[in-house]
Length: 298
Image (cartoon, rainbow, N blue to C red):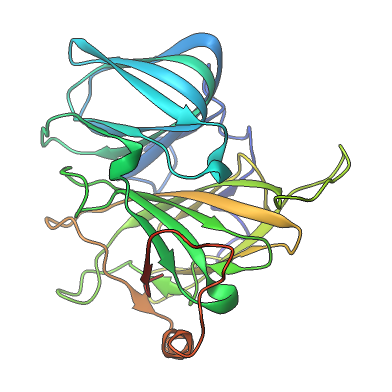
């Protein structure tokens, strides 16, 4: 049996030097993906050249990134709920140094394949409105296969407005079934904040919830209140929902990669929940989310 929440890591529990959190292959059972989160106040963090491709994602603030003999300026954003941000993909085999003020994430995937680094301006980040009704969420697809030419990494970020559910219906991607499902590890990095217009007291505790459960590929059992800086890992199993409390908006950054030769995100719903997608066709999207195109995936 799985130990309850063994794949859930509260903020600070994965601290390493200048990094508030580090996920990499030093975690037993974790192989293909990683994430690093740092808070900078005019300083810098550095990463060596390695068989790792990376995406630098400003969470709040702006940054300068030295890489490949050049410097890329990321304008960033005020916070993760302010909309999408520009990002920088740095191909495997390149060192980088990040300077600036704010909160920054580096999404990672292990690969020996060298792809050219690429800057993606905010105007080029596709914004998708996914689901309907209280299942509506907003997805920023800056690191998906149709947007970014990468070796293995797949990354996006999701905003779930107060009272809504995302990563729903529960689904999995833990076995290779050609044309139907791809085998991918997945990282969820969370942030939460009071919904726009609310005036909470200083001691307010912004949170959402997140769940995983077992599939034939392995036993997993996550049922956690999630807050800013928390990380949940999904090596296998069904995952979802991620639910925003009625007073708080929920954000998560997803990072995926796996052992397969094809870079694709194919999922299998929990068959007891797959009917929900057809139900969306009878509902309108949440009017609080109006940008982008309407989609029906997880």
